[in-house]
Image (cartoon, one colour):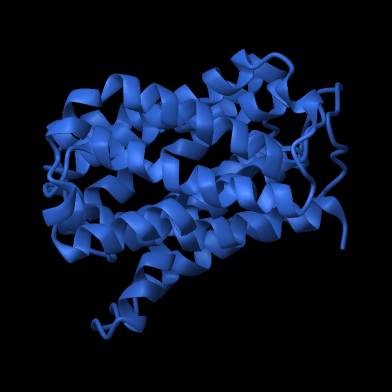
Length: 304
C-alpha cells in the first residue's frame, strides 16, 4: 500500500472517530468548563502518545529542535477544541456538524496561503459535491429544516474553531522536519496541554473532579484517547502525504458516521432520501482519490 493510500485510510478512520466526539461533546459540554475538560484531554492523550512513542520510535533529541513549532500547533488545535465545546453549550450537534463541513474549503484556502497548494477544478468539484452531500445528510434531506437553519451564538463560536482546524492541517506539513507522526503528535499535545493549563487554570482549580458525573469521565476518556490521541496521529500522518484540501475533505463523512453511530446505539435509521447524501460524499472521495502523485514534503505546487 502506497503512503498516499495509507493517508486516505488514516483519514477514513479519523472521520469515524471524530463523529463520536460530537455525540459525547453535546452530552458533557454543560457539565464541565471547556478549558478544564480539554486540559485533561490533552494531558491524558499526551501520556498515551508518549508511551506509544517510547515503545516504537523513541523520542529522539532532534525532535526537540525549534520547540516553538509545537507551541504553534498545540495552540491552534487547542483553540479548535475549546471553541468546539463552548459552541456545543448552545449549538445543537446537527448545527455544529453543518458548520464543521465548511472546514475542507477553508483548509484549501489555508493550504494555498501557507504551502501554495493548488486546488484544481477537479478538486474543487469534488469538494463541492462532498459539501452538498454532507449538508444533505446533516439536514436529513429535509429542505424545510435546511431553510430554518439559523446561525446562533454557539454556531458562530464553533465556526472560528473550525478556522483554527483548517489552519492546523497545512501548518503540520509546513512545520514538520521529518519527525515521525507519533513523536510530532506528542510534542503538539504536551505544548497544547501547557497552554490550556495556563489559560484555564482557574476553571481547572474550580472543577470538582471527584464528583463529576460518570458520563463526563466516559466522554473525557473517549475524546482523549480516540478523538485526540488516535486522531492526532492519523491527521499528522495524512497531512505529510496528502494536500490539505484532501485531508479535510474527509470531514464530509462525519455526518454519515454520526448516523452509523446512531444505528449502532439502537437509534432509528434515517429516511431513504438521506442515503443520497451518503452517496454524494462517497463520489466526492472517489474523485479525490484520482491522480495521486504527491510526494512527502513536496516543494512543487500540489494538485489533485
